[in-house]
Structures are given as structure tokens and as C-alpha cells.
Image (cartoon, rainbow, N blue to C red; front, side, top):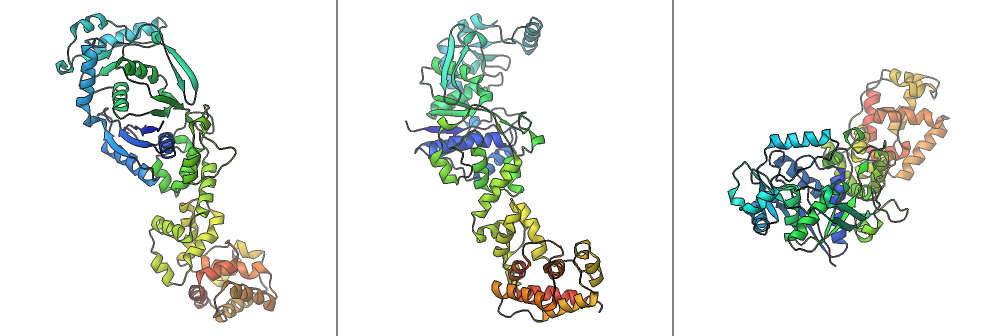
Length: 479
């Protein structure tokens, strides 16, 4: 069977990690099997739905390059279709009008709870409603339309992830199909949409398991073939509790702001419930080609920010220097053209510093001191700095002369081998240990005492920029 899957978020909140994982699994199942993927926006909860959340959903999917073949389909554009289907159920005696007030329903619920019973509609209007057989056009704001749920028997399905699941119809009540305001409920609209769109596989979170028997009963009452169902376990935080903001479970777009990249997010989220042996790293194409529901697990996965950061770092290393540089410039709002005018090998610096960071944001922060002018520092401040105390030369004058001569005799042929040789020969000529020259150079040209190998840093900053920064230090120093 060629699969047709869907992702059906409600625009009542931000698009979070669990929702994105659901979208990815449906998308991969379709893409990996020459199927179709549909985006449906379930926005019939008009009071809580917003255009802002809808835009966030679309932007999140676009950022991850999760494309769809149909949609976005908005349920509020299909209201006439839901009424058409409910009218069919009404005419066949499979649905009925209920006039119970909210006050009476609340009292019914209170009494059931007091008796230790499961709160549910008691079917008060069931017999009368079936006889009336009105159409949805007669909704007047005081009644709802309920489904005539089977009173006996069981609902069973072979879940593609959790295995055989059976729920007694006695556990179910006559759910509302159309609210008093004329809008469909989730369970009803979702069924109608899935049937009309020929969805073959419904893959969603296991918080929907209680909805599935209700939906199966509706589908069977319409005489339609059941799709396959698969329910994914929730994503938990490191403490084993349901993932929430206290675990760092931000909107998917917040991860973009924090410097994570799409391929890494897809890789990490794919592994939260699916595996291919012990393999941790996948390209997007590899994930799509290898994904199968049979390799999904039924137990909850734990979100680990450190693991996500590591995976992001590994994916960053697979990008070209040009791609990394572009992402950093966009993040830091800086001009690559202006940086290169100063002779700085920005792409090389990005590559060099990748060993120390895992996200674009961290890389951007690291690069700041490399591409911006360091804060002025005096010779005395340099000598007395904590980083230099253990590696100081005999006097301030000697250090000044070393820096002066180093700046004066920079090699014209600015290649890494020549820069490295020049640094080493200066150490030998002046009888210095590596930190005695490397730390001052770092502080002067970067404004910090730590960096990768100083020869690499000097080479990538470029001869013009190194000379400019050294001379600025020398000009501001009292000899």
C-alpha cells in the first residue's frame, strides 16, 4: 500500500518538539515509500486558535524543510462538509440532538464522581433524540448533536507501534459531534477529514489513544474502511516527567534562535522513538530512506539537551565553510564582505572554532573577538594579567621589544607554514617558552588569553589585521 499520511496540528499554541517529531515520522513514512503527505490545520477551536500560532507552525515546518503535497487545509473552510456528514448520521438514526444544559451536565458529572463512577454522559436525550431526526440546520444554539455510540461490544485495533489494543464500548459515551455553535468537535472533524483525504496511516501521540475507539466507531457507522493507527509515546524530560518548558522544551523556532540547524534537529528528534541499530548520526536523506514504523519503540523517550547539542555540532562539521559562515553572519547580523575586506579568513576561522562549540550561536559568540577590534590594553595591564603572571618574561621592556620586533618583521608570504615558522623562530631567538609569547599575542589581537593554536589564529586573521592590532597596542604603550 502506498501510504498517505497527515500532520494535523491545532493552532492553539506553539509548535513543540513532540508535534514536530510526529510530523517527521509521517513525512518520512510518506517520502520513503513514494506516498503523499498532507498538512491540515485543525482550527475549529476558534476561541483559542490564532493566526500567530498558524504562522509558527508553517514557519517551523519550512525551517526544517518538511514539505507537504496537499495543504495547508483549514478545517474552518470545511464546515459545510461536516454538517453534510452529520446530517447523514442523523437521517440514519446514528446521531441525535441533545438539549441537556451545561448546568445539568455539570451536576450529572458531580454525582458520578461522588459515587466513584467515571464521569460520562448518561444518555438522557438518546431515545428522544433518535426519534426527532432533525437536521443540523435546526441547531439554534441550545442543543448539540451527539453520536449514537454502541452500548455493548469492544473496539479493537492492531496499533502499528503499541500492538493490539482493545477498549470496551461500555467505557465510552455518546460524544458530541457538533457543538451548539455549529462547529464540529475534534473527533468528528478529524474522522471526516481523514476519510475525505484518503489518509491510510494515522500516526500521532499516544495521548490520542482514548480518542481512537470513538473515531473507529464513527468510521464504521459511516461504512468506511479503517485506516492504520500508530500511537507514539510521549517525550519525557530527563527526570522522567512529561516534557515541559522547565526541561527546555521551547517552540521549535526557539531552537533556530539558539543556533541549532535543521538537519541536526531532524536527526535528534528522529531518534526519540525510532532507531536503526546503535547508529546515532543520520543525514535527512538517510533518515527518510531507513525509517519504518516497525523500528519505533512503545516506551517514552527522554529529551537530552546535551545530546542535541552534540549532534548539532557533528552536523555543523559536515557543512561547508561557506555555509557555516553564511549562517554565522545571519545570526550575528554582520557583513561577510566587510570582514573579508580586512583580510580575515572568516570561513577558516569558523572551521577552526567549530571544535570548541556546538551551535551557531556559540560560534557567533566565539567569533566576536576575532572579527571585532579588541579592547585596548596597556603593557602594564598585560604583564599583570592573571593569565600572564606564571609565564612572564624578565621585564616589561623585554616584552615590549619582543612584540615590537614581532610586528615589524611579519612575513610577507602569509601562509600557515611561514607564520608557524616565524612564531617558532621568534621563540628560539628570544629564548622564550611558548606561553610567554602566545598569551600576549592572544590578549593583544583577541582581547582574551585562550584560543586555538596561536599560529592558526594569526594566519586566519590575516597579515594586515594582525599588524594593525599589534601596532595599535604598541602605539598606546608608554615605553
